[in-house]
Image 1 (cartoon, one colour):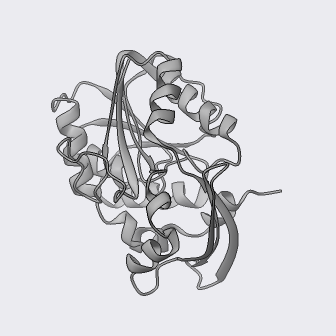
Image 2 (cartoon, one colour):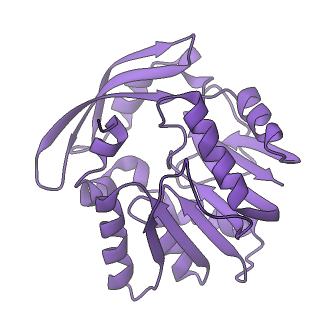
Length: 253
């Protein structure tokens, strides 16, 4: 049986690119460039690349990027977009819980909940972090965003999603946040690229900073920094607060 995140991303490429949370690509890539010191010789792996927006933007800037995703339709969209812009990017289908790469990349990115933290168990989410780490070379860097567990303790997730929604975007309702598991359960309604409406029962894992720090320490990271993730404007100056819906994590081996 397909999981909600597999069904969600079927035939949802064009519509995905119109979602409000997908509009910060350029600013987010500016931050990534700074983190790697504008070094064009490195190899980058984009896990959960979706329609390839970060892979394409980085490739346009001269970086060597490989994009991977679980969704065929998202990858098809990514390939078409890259082709249209005359870019040669290796977009491939992989499950982030089981990757074949070992010590191959200098930077791994997982942005906008790319794979992590959508899995149905904590163990599966951990497998994604483990596989991302295995893919990195010595002294490699992992940059990812994830849902900030401090936010739902002070705010309504449903109200936040509604306030950031543009007409035609996905809607999230009947949110219930479970304090024992730090999972938000909701009904997500989206319209796919053919105009079909889907109603999905979703649940996503929110993490508190201390959990992320501990998970990454067990994987051997020696430097772990966590910031607030502002859409399209990632910055080391943004201290994580209870107002941030997402956190930005930068970890070095």
